[in-house]
Length: 222
Image (cartoon, rainbow, N blue to C red; front, side, top):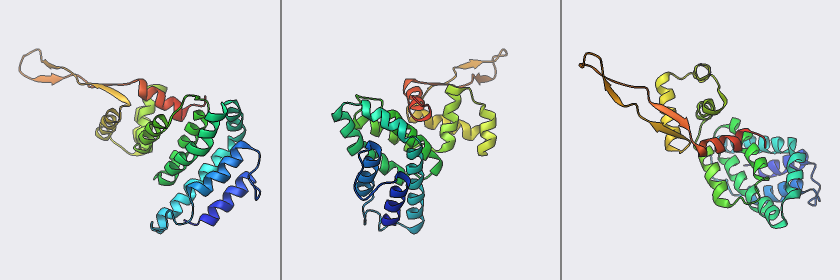
């Protein structure tokens, strides 16, 4: 990764001078970029991965800048210790997820969760890692299917949009169950009226509490 290039872009996007500013978010970014992506951290990775990481981080910074005022206001309301943890610890943690993300489109969710995190006074590292680990394991199509269970979005249109069939849709639902976002009940076997052919009712999936809170955290603006 071209560390100097990333550092320069961070300074340009946040208009950071040579010394950290009094602005909480700008100072967090200035110190976090240095601490999260110091020279040599990713020197052994392939060039395409380096470019992807640079694109990810640049998008992360731009989206963060767009919501800078909102985030700044939230951080100012936090207790000093919580604010220190957020700016010194959570920024670095989230930066790692940004750098490792394979789908650039998910950066928007990463940023939204980060901004929402600033409203949770009692948040701890286990909470942050649990939510972001789950997000890391999802692809955009998985999130799109999960959204249908909360926002009444058309699953048929989503399948067409992502080019998947009904069987692939069901596999994604099973994945969402494994990740703890959906609950599942298999249809009970029943006999036909003739008592010859055994049929199965439609399997049922529903959004559980973790899935509901997960979507709120990453999709909605608190």
